[in-house]
Image (cartoon, helix red, strand yellow):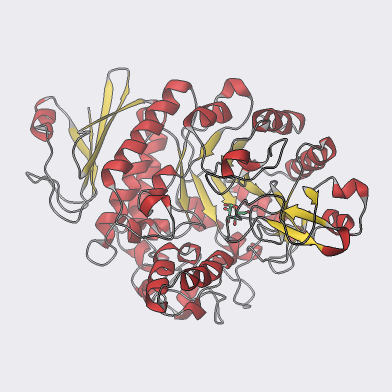
Length: 544
Ligand code: GLC
C-alpha cells in the first residue's frame, strides 16, 4: 500500500533520447530529459537494462550486472543520472534480469571451460547431440535446450540461445545476485523491476511436457516464494519499491508475491489482460480484442488482489507490447479520444500505474511495410516460423505488424523535426510517419492533448485518496462495450465509465441520470458535456 499514490514512468533507453548522435538513445539522453519526466508528476523511473551485453535481446542478455554498456554511457553517467533524478524527486528503478545471464557472462564462459563451480551456476544436463533433455520450447521459438559439443552437455535457455537460465537451487548463485542488488542500492537506486522472476525455480526432475511447451513445470515453480523472500530480505531491499514481471501466472501466486505480510515484492505485473486479442491463446494468431473477456479479467484481478491483500502494477504498454492506442483504440479516427480513454481506464484502478515512454503522447504501432524494418529477435524468428507454417509474406507481415515488440520500441517522438527529434542521424529503428502530429513539442502547446490529459490524471491520484486507497467494485458487468467501476472510501465514491468501441454505446442501467440525481459531478472526461449514450471511446469520471 505504500506505493498506492505513486506513478512509475518506464524508459527504454535505446529509444528515449540520443545525446551523442549515434542513432541510439543513451544515459546522458535521459539526464537531458529529466525535467520533462518530472513535469509529468511521476515518482519513479524504471529503465530497462543498460548493462554490458551483446544485445541479442536488447540488454536482457546481461554479460555484467555491475558495468554499463559503453553504447549507453559510463558508470559516471549513471551516477549522475541517479543524483540528478533525486534532485527532482524521482527515484530510479533498475531492471534485474536474474532468470538468466548472457552466454557472454564470465560465469557462463567459465562453465564452458568445464569449471565445475560455474557449470553448477546454470542448468546443464548430460546427453548426446541427437536428443535434448526435454521437449520444452523456448519462448522465442525452437527447443529450449542447446547442446555444447565439447562438454557433452545441454544447457537450458527459456529465451534466446544466448540467454542461459541460472540455477537458483545453487545457494552461491543466490548470493551473487544479492550482491548485485546491494551494489546498486549503495549507488542510490530506489527500487528494482525483476525480469520474468516467476520462472526462476525449476523442477527437481526435467521431463517432457506432453500437454504443452513446458511452462507448467517452471512457472511459479516450487521454491519461487522462498527464493524471493530470501533475495529481498537478505539484500535489504524490503522497503524499496519492487515489481516482479510474472509470466503466465495465477492470481493466488500474485497475492503471495505482493502481500506485504509475505515480504516478497511490492507489486506484480501480470499479462492476462494483454492476451484478449490472442486467438486460442496464441500471440501469433490475430483476432479483435475480446472486450467482455477484458472486463472480466480486470474484475477478477482488481477484486481478487484487493481481497487477498495483494497489489497490482496497472499498465497497458511496455517495451514488449504493441501500442495500446493501436491495439484497443482507433489510432486513425479517434486517436486522442481512445488514448485518453485507455489512460483513464487503468489510472483510476486499484494499483500503481506505469506509463511507458510515448504512451503519454498516444504513440502508435510502427506501421512498417517490410520485414527489413524490424530488429527484434522474437519478430525475426517468428517471421520465419510463420512462413514455414505456409503463411504468405503478406500474411506473415500483417501478423508481425500487429504483434511485434518493435511496435513499442520505436524512438520517442520529441518533435516534428527529422527523426522525431530523437537523434541527429538515422536511428536504429525507424518511426511511424505520424510523429509529426503526436510529439512532445506539439502536445505541450495543446491544452487538450493526450500529454496534458496524462498530467491531469497523475495529478488527480496525488490529490484524491479515493484513487490511491479506495476499494473497487464493478458494475454494468454484462455490458459488452462499456467498462464500469466504482471506487469507494468512507462516504466518498468515484465512478469510471469507459466505452471501448468506436461507436456510441448505451448503458444497461439508467446510470447517468441516477447519478446526477444523487449529486455526482463529472470531474474528468474526453468529450464536453454529456450525451444520452457514451460516444466513441468516451470516458466519464464522476465523483461524489
Ligand atoms: C522479459 C523482458 C523481455 C525479455 C525477456 C527475457 O519478458 O521484458 O524484453 O526479452 O524477459 O529476458
